[in-house]
Length: 286
Image 1 (cartoon, rainbow, N blue to C red):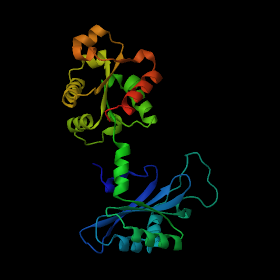
Image 2 (image 1 turned 30 degrees about the vertical axis):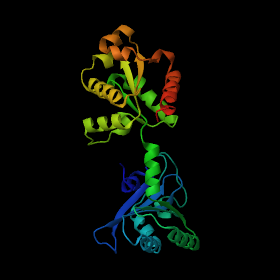
Image 3 (image 1 turned 120 degrees about the vertical axis):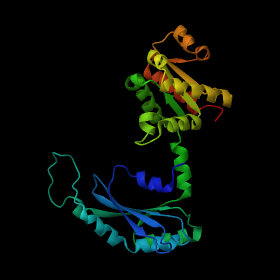
Image 4 (image 1 turned 90 degrees about the vertical axis):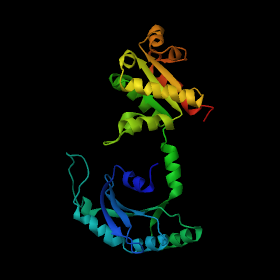
């Protein structure tokens, strides 16, 4: 499961930032992570803090708020002028003149109690700050939203023409999917990541093509894992999409697969994506 610290690291992906660490006074074994971010087009700065679990979370928040000017001053060591390469800049532009947006984000491993929140709200108003708290509730909700609902299994030769359009189409319908280009990162263990994706998703979209059928490597391994998942869970997991294959070809590959109601890519990209979305998002077993 993704941690709050990881969300601190990966949230705001389009912002330029300066990151540094501070020692947590009340616990010298832990460090506060500080990020001064700058929105590329508005040239406005904001602050993000990750505070690890401790017994003095409110006091740490207050101390950080009292040192906002120091954190912003540190960001002046980076000289950045945003925009396109051919832009003509006039006047006071660039990070040296970037205004503080008064936005502060706290990523807190320990949730603040209602009394602490009221106190922090008063401080925020007195300092004209807009504070956003992201705690374990944020972690839970964010994980739920990002949890893939379907695994997309395909041969790499079908990636550009079929797999990628399906993955993008489902994502646009707010149906998150496990798709290698979206879900794998450099250094990931391929087998473990794929098995985890298959186990955690409700449905598995199999893009059945001549390429898929002839592939005795990863796609065969994925198919075996998906088929096993369907047997163990005793539910309809597999959503086949046929791409230029005949019933006989599919039967030769797997009689059980040939017996499943399938979508055909010849029906058109939009039709296939919409039907997959309905089968995934409105699955009665969920």
